[in-house]
Amino acid sequence: MSQKYHAQIYVTLRPSVLDPAGVAVQSGLSHLGYDNVEQVRIGKYVELTITAANEDEAKASLDRICDQLLANPVIENYRFELKAVAGVGV
Image (cartoon, rainbow, N blue to C red; front, top):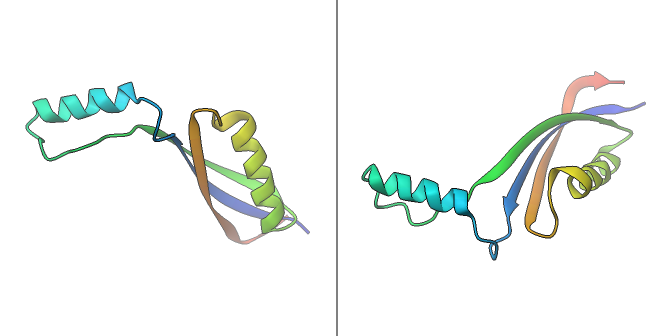
């Protein structure tokens, strides 16, 4: 029997990669008077529901999905949080 899992995926630029969007937002914030913001980094947030036999299989699938499509492993890092959807077995 399979289980459904809800995944929240966060993709961010590696710290060594220049983030022009983050710099633009920080500049905009400064122009609005928010001089207390020291750094802005822009990333992506993805939610998906995945079906798998167990949590380990779901995590392995998510790793492949992130590596192959959602993140560029050369310049981006990713992490995800995974929760079983309560009461839903497939």
